[in-house]
Length: 370
Image (cartoon, rainbow, N blue to C red):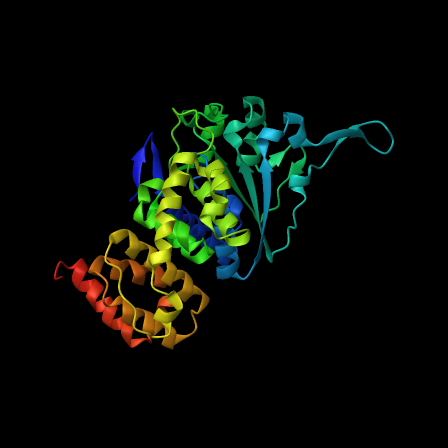
């Protein structure tokens, strides 16, 4: 749920994407320039998913408007104030100084393009650089250089309280921005993770221990800690290098910390006790796990398999038939995961009788009848 703290709305990554995508798609469809909207500032702790949100917003705009969407990612921490204006040089007759246009202003102004200027780590930039961003965020210019009318401006940064490299934002700049604080939400992350192909062991473990998704503590001096970003890196190791958590343990510990990596490794041993996922989808008789941690693991494994065979109605139906023996809350979890396999996948599921039956059971659970 959203709330208000320090005088700004607090939204999950998913809700941030939804709200911003909706307003940007609406004005693009109407042929209105994004310059009529205020520039947006996303606040949040390291690794919460701010950059991920920008990439998803770009995809949503492209899917819903048909226009190509291009992101220009600018890390203001690496800039000097003069860098935003360009390099000074002389004109042709050596009488005046002119400024070579910085790369960030080299955007296609065509009507079939939507540009997004992403000013990342703006709060980590010295105040002199933040001050140079005044004109960009409000007037969309620096010196004689102007952003095209088809450009959306979004900034992001860590809060001063996050103990990261961060400078207090000048009031004059802050007043030029629409502020949103992005918070970590397991449900929001899980919906994204299923679609993004995050390793099922990571999803399964975090479904069982949702409090382990985000372990950032600004008071701690730990260098390796859990965030949605570091868990995504763990998933990349398992998906692309080696799926054996025991083998990858030292590298996983370097991403999320030794203690949590040990807990994750111990939990992953449960995968050896799981029924064969392929047998479940082939409709073979399989025993249903009893313990909650093993049930979380099998739900995650089934979701991953279902994503890879999402067009096979018979296999999906077999898996849902098997899941009918789950406790009601795990039935609900599996259905929700399946519905998030891809956009509008629920329409496909509604054609499968087993889905309808389990949906009815989930509805009774939510109404307190089971």
